[in-house]
Length: 232
Image (cartoon, rainbow, N blue to C red; front, side, top):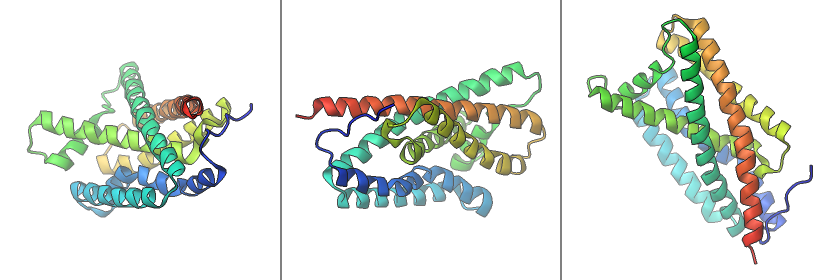
């Protein structure tokens, strides 16, 4: 399969320069996940960790945008916007998958219990249950969305990839995230129904990753094509 053409106005120097920034931009995309790790492993307040990581993300992003070529800035902002849409969509499908699998499983395991934990860490366990649920859901969606942005910077190649590669890298990314959950969550959440947790979590992350890979490829190819058409 031939690659889509480089959009008019984006010279090779700009594309190469942007490509060198992919790992840094991808790391910025997992800022909320790093904050959660600091809480789980280091006992750092989740609110404090999120605040610090968000500030660092904004500082790095502004600095990178200031020193980048105009073409590179456009590429970065388009990829971030695409990643937000793709990541949020994949997270919603991930949650729908967990809901379906939990309905098929006769055990009392609740795959969404962690959302209440997230919420309590943010607003306090004594807060109104609705506020706890809202805060936990917001963090959950933020995690899934930001991981989607990170995936697009690391593996999506601006949509210039085959369907097979998009699917494999997406599933691989989903299983990479699953590895962290399987390692950290059972002890942190005192999960007793481990087999049910592992099965539902792994299958849901596979679906999440596949959605990221395929939808990300589709969206980025549309962006590249539309950019080529719009340029004079």
